Length: 175
Image (cartoon, rainbow, N blue to C red; front, top):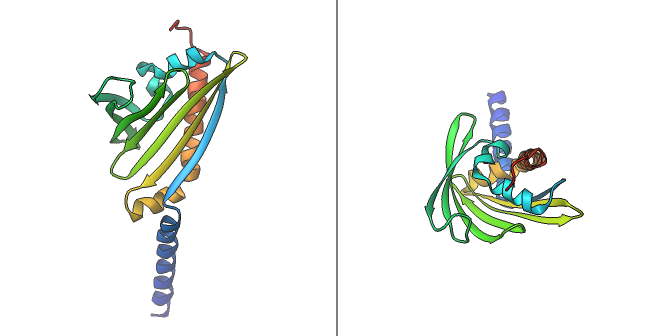
């Protein structure tokens, strides 16, 4: 019985830490950056090429336009991604777009919402890409999970941007 009390105390303490972190850290913000040895015009073209998205966005399957005009403010799409054999669907809304400079969008799904912005700047024939992400869990459990996932989300964004860099630098297609 004594061990059962200790076990119960440990379980309660872990639950309090888990849910407490979600209450005190309801959103996660991070920025990432990569420099690509190509001009911004080519970087934008390759990044915008829908056929190349599965090559640099982990788990990307496809997009389906729901409303609006593609690549314009207000365009709404369903984005299908696969994670560990499970297909997930997100709603994407483009909130800002300035070709060869900036694209911002919101992603909405059951578990979380994300505001994402990617900006580009060319200097000496090289393009600096910066991404900014703010993720908020939907519900206390999701907020707690998201608060513990910041490191893995940053790592995934680094991986995606480095894949984009490789694809652009190896590009031979004339856009």
